Length: 127
Image 1 (cartoon, rainbow, N blue to C red):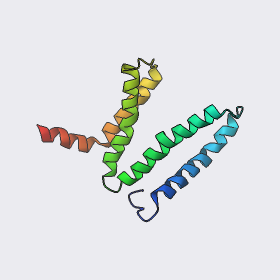
Image 2 (image 1 turned 180 degrees about the vertical axis):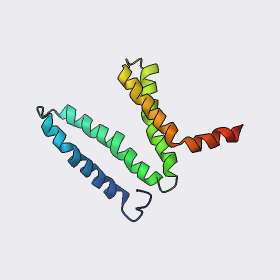
Image 3 (image 1 turned 90 degrees about the vertical axis):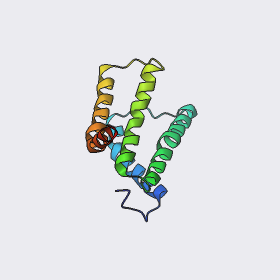
């Protein structure tokens, strides 16, 4: 979809996507209402995480679609959490339960299934 829309400013389009996703998730907040956090420590970290780990990568991914195939970008986007999971498990010795393990295994399986033809051509090309 982003590859087709070339005339719209990427930053504005990202803003629309984030607002729509926030509106879709808003009813869930009312179903699981909790006290509203007021500490500046909490909100400064939320802002840091939102900008550094969400807005900037999504913005860069939308620009990356202009120069590379969406399937290759999809591999990079979905490999990132798997790499983070692996680093947390092996380097930081985080405890991983069975549900987390199978969730990341399912993510890896989806990458392999979605990119099966590409992976097959790479494997057979080297032999």
